[in-house]
Image (tube, rainbow, N blue to C red; front, side, top):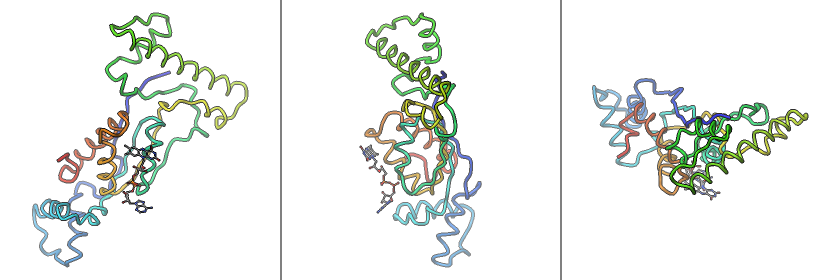
Length: 221
Ligand SMILES: Cc1cc2nc3c(=O)[nH]c(=O)nc-3n(C[C@H](O)[C@H](O)[C@H](O)COP(=O)(O)OP(=O)(O)OC[C@H]3O[C@@H](n4cnc5c(N)ncnc54)[C@H](O)[C@@H]3O)c2cc1C
């Protein structure tokens, strides 16, 4: 078993290195004012569109991201209907070497070395005894699941049958394609404190990648 961090990367856009210019070109079509395109006019135009709520123009920018997160988080993410998805299948891919997303409540620990110590019977109680018990229980359930899953496959179960025992924190890869308006909508809901902490963390990674790509649209205001 291996514990891994969540991650987010942009793998494709239709705006290339000129996302604002693409939106400007689309917006200016409405007024046939393409002749007013100048150096710097795209940024002004996009800021004006957002300020006036003319968000339909923002939809012309499309971004595809590759996310590594947990099954629990993707279960929530795919509720966003204005996006397209491709997700690693637990029916066709096996999870013998189980990869687990480090949950937010364990983020301050070196989870892989804690787990190694747990497996060799050397997990030392940290200062907080309650936390120690929680971590031990978490590891114990996960190693039991991994063992059970592998034994099911060994005994002839199909992957789609054995997957029934897999945990919510199982790592998964998902490709998400959405337009910029929908990404902004997803971020507004998923960065909020009401969202699950793991989802909030993933949303912060998505925000960082998107604002590196197009700060005018995605930098947090
Ligand atoms: C903190 C949090 C807790 C949640 N808890 C639960 C829960 O306990 N149980 C549960 O079932 N879900 C839960 N959800 C999921 C939630 O109900 C939505 O399914 C999810 O957030 C997608 O939001 P959305 O519909 O606005 O966005 P999207 O599906 O991304 O759609 C974007 C926008 O398009 C428009 N739109 C999309 N489809 C339609 C349509 N058919 N008709 C009209 N307009 C449409 C709407 O304006 C919508 O806001 C939770 C979400 C959050 C953020």
